[in-house]
Image 1 (cartoon, one colour):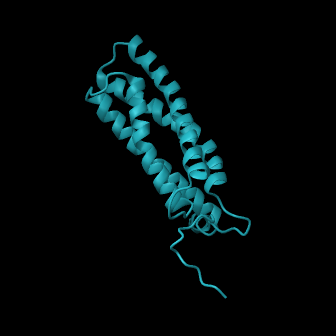
Image 2 (cartoon, rainbow, N blue to C red; image 1 turned 30 degrees about the horizontal axis):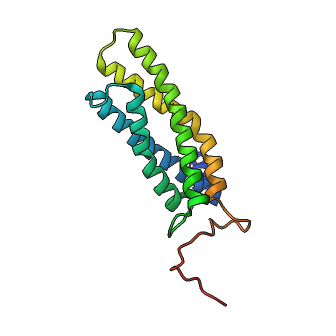
Image 3 (cartoon, rainbow, N blue to C red; image 1 turned 30 degrees about the vertical axis):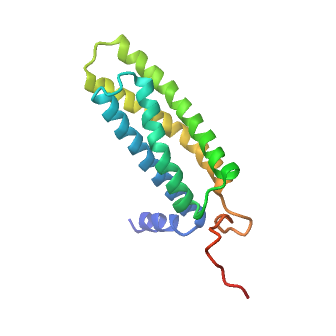
Length: 169
């Protein structure tokens, strides 16, 4: 038992491990936001199309993903850099959403070829989105690490807010 506790404690020792854990936590949060939005808009039939509901859910989930990853995972503050952060994030986010739409299209096929109740249909649409997000997660980690990642000295990012002063020698 002590070996398992030591192993878990060792996960938090390195910067890279903490970054992976934070990235995973943010992914869980943004996926949960997407899941809840899809469950609401599709489950309560505000949006009756599985693909449209998936699109809306993932667009809503993208905001906490960007904001939390930028600030908490990679330690960035201040204004976002359009070409180094915003455009790459949205390119990747929209690619992930496109990947989720493939899952939603398959869910739509299942929903429309079977006579299941709407609660099961909603679960299938949500499951397809979560599965798509899980598959796409690993790729996003490596690309986001490239965008917001550590510099050669092992420090997180160099795009700090201009109003944060660092001590000079």
